[in-house]
Length: 247
Ligand SMILES: [Zn+2]
Ligand SMILES: [Zn+2]
Image 1 (cartoon, rainbow, N blue to C red):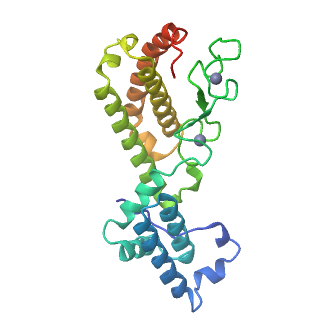
Image 2 (image 1 turned 180 degrees about the vertical axis):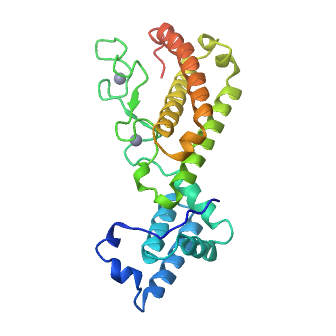
Image 3 (image 1 turned 120 degrees about the vertical axis):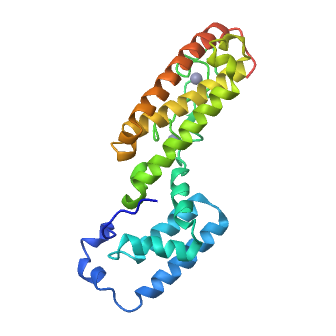
């Protein structure tokens, strides 16, 4: 993993810069406590706990070298310690939704309006993209600490690319433009899956992160693949959704 040079910065650094640059006795206790916390968090295998504990350790080590922080994580969790932290941040979920969507307000998730017409707001999908994460299902990227952000974004790209490959491999009939032959529920789950992948890749492409520049070509290609499949599916959903009442 690429380790950026420099010192750790937290928001409180500006206010307390003298103190943080000359740690007082007792700071080692904070570091030890934070190392214990991250070890417990890793044992819990809970993503939010691991990210929270990494932040505590980071705060306890403010003013120290980034290398020292990474060494402390390795000391607490073993050689894969930083990989665990990066993976946790890359999987952190939006707290407002489930996988990037929320129940449609207009039809209350029933797909149809009281008149019996297919809901135009969700186009009969029963859900709409979450306005908080814009459909990615990911936590806000701003919460990712600077020193690992690019590695996390890179990981998110690789996950999303692998997820798109899985979707293509598992659904050859759609890739071949025969989505119309699929049952409605299968088409619906693919529409939602593609919506999420599109939101994730767009989010990475627009992040301005060096990882986005590095994957620029692959991002463009993947977004084109998704757009083509969305085209195939939207036709299939439109044609069949009105005759399908089962959800
Ligand atoms: Zn609706
Ligand atoms: Zn969300």
